[in-house]
Amino acid sequence: MSFSEFYQRSINEPEQFWAEQARRIDWQTPFTQTL
Image (cartoon, rainbow, N blue to C red; front, side, top):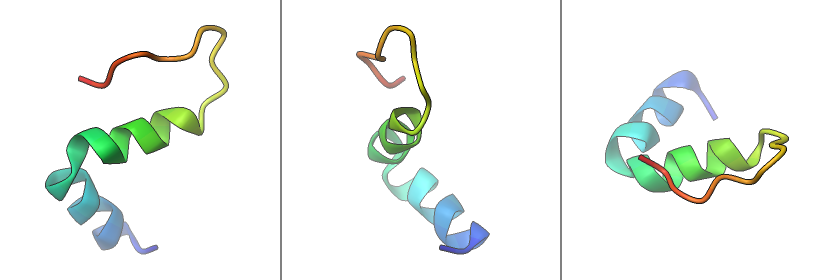
């Protein structure tokens, strides 16, 4: 996926996009909400 595609997804579907990105991080306590 190109930068522009990532950017468009972050604008068009921000909650879904950032939730997917947050799942890629190893958390001590998993996130429960995207802002």
